[in-house]
Amino acid sequence: MRTHYAALVLVGLLTGCASEPAPAAAPERTSSVVPRPLTTGERAELEEAEAELTRRCMEREGFQLYLTKPPAGPPALPYGNDDVRFARRSGLGLATVDSVKLRAADPNIRYVESLPADRQAAYGRALNGDPKQAMSAQLPDGSTDNMSRVGCTASAQAELYGDGERWFQVSAIVNYLPAEYLPKIDADRRFRTALANWTACMRRAGHPVSSPAQLRTGFPAFRAAPSAKEVAAAIDEATCSKATQLTATGKRIEREHQARVYRAHRDAVLEYQTLSVAALDRARTY
Figure 1 (cartoon, rainbow, N blue to C red):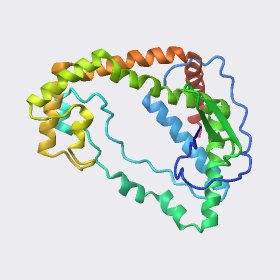
Figure 2 (tube, one colour):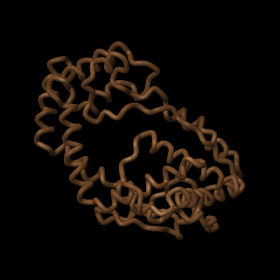
Figure 3 (cartoon, rainbow, N blue to C red):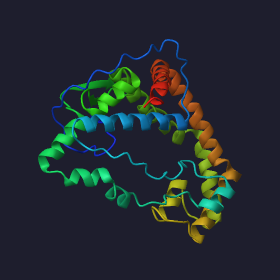
């Protein structure tokens, strides 16, 4: 069994009893909402609205919650990069910020650490609720995902999505689905062939690596700007990826496997999209 706390910060804080959140206003009907995937920008709007609702709730509980916006992370390149222009400009697309230092500078962490021990525990209860008052989601692999139905995180989701428990259940399922389709990509014969061709190309270019991920392990985890050595390796990667179609093949196969898995869990995906679209209008009023 897995336990899930959908907290914005400090997930590891102690949890305990918390009062029931104030009931949210009755949500508008969603029967007329047309389900669709949200754009990246729209999903960010929902995340910002949930953060603001959580902040207000924590303020009512007598605590501060700072809404910070960390810098954008590095691009996701699970199948490497095949754009030479990107390689010349951004190298291998590695992080530009030290996440350890960024976390140390987080005002929420500094705030909680400034509190006495009993108030730190109270902060955790206010934010994350009581694990004994849990709602559960059955995941496709048979495991269970749990989250407290009380606390400011639960209260914010209930207000934003209308039905907090149903949102938790369908979002837990949808967020799990990559675990079903991503392993299928590595096992796909077409991808293995493209990867073998890419590996041979990279070895000829002087890079004895077996994957784009391994190529990146040879460089710092973060840096302000790519070095000349990194840019050169990135150009070789992009050239080989273009020649062998590794990146394009990986993306195409991912879409195929994702579509199959989403069709198998169509009801949960459609409900997730319906609740998300309905929540978008609410988000724009906060």
